[in-house]
Length: 155
Length: 150
Image (cartoon, rainbow over all chains, first blue to last red; front, side, top):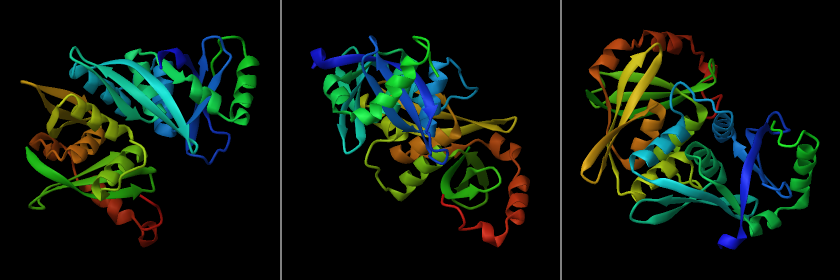
């Protein structure tokens, strides 16, 4: 499984093109910028991710800050998060939690996994299989958009 | 401290936010707390017991606790400062107990999933005034009800 994991970085969070949609798009890209993974998330998750990317700490802990605080209090380390599957337009993810005694994998939405990973500075991966499973028409517009910016630019 | 329960969840068309109504057993105390839509949904799902297809953020919190064999002893709404409520989540884990700072909305959403009691300190009950809420209620027109999905 390790050989099939592709490390990803969060490039940015965009509002959905449809202004009435209650969703945002989180764009992940691999390190050599050959693959992209756009994930649609709710506004709360999108905001949580954007705040983490921009390094903004809100005055009161938001849900994902609490999630991170709980894992820390319990001595659990987020060793990595992985986007593991795509089924019927739904992405699946796993959060790998480790304690001195064991490692446990928790089923999660990618949005929560990413929002948590950014707060714990844990690496984010997707399986090669998931990256390949995406329909090109979902990914290409984002690849184009990213390449049209300065390299390494974020939204 | 007074133990309270979630007795209502309403949409506030003026702020586009939601109001969680906490009441005590004897119906002598009432605490309205304004929360955002995602927290309102998390609370609503826990009350209705309708499972989502995929784990939502507060389900994930509960799973993390279960994984570590940690229990939520209680949540307490501890303070009200400049219109912001503060809460603490009391956990037991191994031989230790921890208090984790939280927004009341998250604390309540988690407490409902953990079947843990919700308390409000006397200080908060004294500090908050139901005047504002009563005025808000009086200003609501009948057509405001049922217009929005909570």
